[in-house]
Image 1 (cartoon, helix red, strand yellow):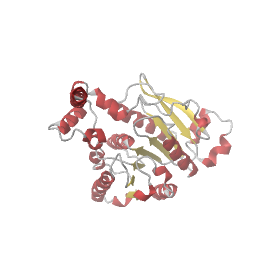
Image 2 (cartoon, one colour; image 1 turned 180 degrees about the horizontal axis):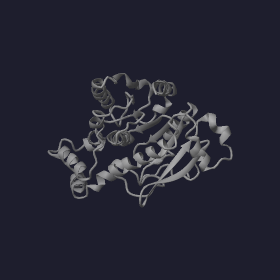
Image 3 (tube, one colour; image 1 turned 45 degrees about the horizontal axis):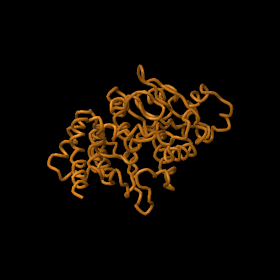
Image 4 (cartoon, helix red, strand yellow; image 1 turned 135 degrees about the vertical axis):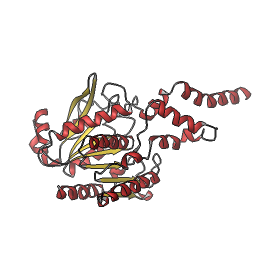
Length: 326
C-alpha cells in the first residue's frame, strides 16, 4: 500500500516538473492536433460527409500546406453537378456571403459537430470554407499561435480576392475564436476590417481556459503553480487574448455561448461582450455588437450550438443587417 501511495504521489508531483522542463507539452495539450479524429474520414473525399464540397490546399508560406473544404450554398447544388475546382472558386463571387470556419482544438474539419454546422450554414445560403490549420488533419507543419493566425489571414485574403465584393465572415469556435480575433486585428492594422466576426464558445484568454481545466484544478492549491502555467505560456508564445483583441476591433460582432459550456465558462463570453460593447460604444458602433446565449436546458454545452433550433435565423439576421449597410 505504501508503494502505491508513494507512486501516486511521485506521479502527481512530477507533472509540474515535466511542464517546467518540457514546456512544449502544454503546447501540444492546447492544440491537441495529433488527435486527428475522426480517423475513418478521408479528407480528400469530403463528399463522404458533406454534399457538394470540394477539397483543396493552400500554401500560406513555404513548406506549409493547409487543407480546406469549400461547401456550396444549397441553392448552388444543382449547378455544381460535374463541375471542377475552378468552377467552385469562381462560384465564390456569386454574391452570397462567405463564411470562413476556424475550428477548435483536437480533430479535423470532419468532426461531426463541425460538419453539422457547415450543413446548417450551407442550407442558410452561405459558402463555407472549413480550414484545418497547419499540423491539423492533413495539413503539414507544426501549430503555433502565429502560424494558425497566418493560416487564417492567408485564407481570408484568398477568399476576399475571389468573393467579388461579397461579405466575408470569420467564424471562430473555441480555440478558433482566438485565431479569428488575432486575424481580425492583423487585418485592421493593415488598414482594412473584417466584414463580420462570429465567435462561438469564445474565451477571454487561453491561459484562463487552461487554468479552468479539471486536471489543472488539481494543482491550483500548490504554491506557484498558476504562475508556472502563465510563465510557460509566455515561453511558448501562446496567448490567444480575445479580451485584448476586442478592445481594438471595430468589426461587427456576434457572440454565441451556451450557459452550460463546461470547457469555456459562460461568464467569459459575457465578459467579451461587455468589452466589445465598451470599445465600440466609443466609435458609436455598439449597435453592431450582439450576444446570443443558450440556456442550460438545451444541453448544447461547448460544441453543439449547431443544434440550436434558431441558429440559422440568428446568423441570417445578423449578416442580412450587415449586407443592407454595405
